[in-house]
Amino acid sequence: MSPQRTKNYVLVHGAWHSGRVWDRVVPLLTRAGHRVLAPSLTGHGEKAHLLGPDVGLDTHVADVVAVLAENHLTDVILVGHSYAGMVVSAVAGQVPDRIAGLVYLDAMVPADGETVLDVMPLTGHLIEAAAASGTPWRIPPLPEQPAPVGLFGVTDPADTDWLRTMLTDESVRCFQQPVRLDNPAMDAIPRTHIHCVGSTPPGVTRRPVPPVQPNGDPSRVWELPSGHDCMVTAPKELTELLLKAG
Image (cartoon, rainbow, N blue to C red; front, side, top):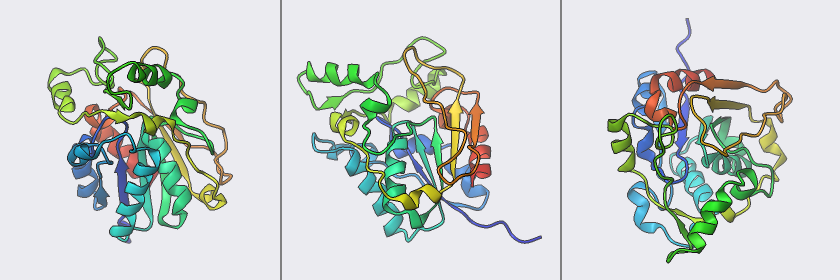
């Protein structure tokens, strides 16, 4: 039997979160023999002090492109959670030769030129609320709601306490900046969609996945019975799917 091929996983967190949100998944993928990076985007985690009104989607795309270049990564399974579906799409458009697969984890899946507001119109309320505040360029994390929605789908008190330690504000510009997806070479990259189906906040809708991927293969859509932050609540089950996606 030939040895298992080592893969490079780059896990990109969603809005308001940090790279620490993957802390329960990284060791599982590593234990399976793979290289895993889970960077914090500008304005989050150890980079929270860099948050400002000029931080936008392009900033976060540049963050991930830099991680790939600085670590000399190719053959990458690029995973984007939630808002990071926008980020990983644009990264694939910029450096398609480095990407072996895209995984949209309960994520936004944009078309060329779209913004977060286009993909998820509900975010317009967040932008309006920020505009009426004393800091119109920043959007605080979503508040915790009653179960089963909880805090980004997390309802266990210990888990929500941990999750709160990594949540920081998001720049409005991240939701307003259009994504650039005009490189036809990215269409060849295989895609996997993982939908968290344990709880969905009111007003949140998910775009249907076309039956055929841009590369002509049948679309691959898997469901995970968990809340939105499945890397917190179902890390083992998520890891199993990520290993299959690679």
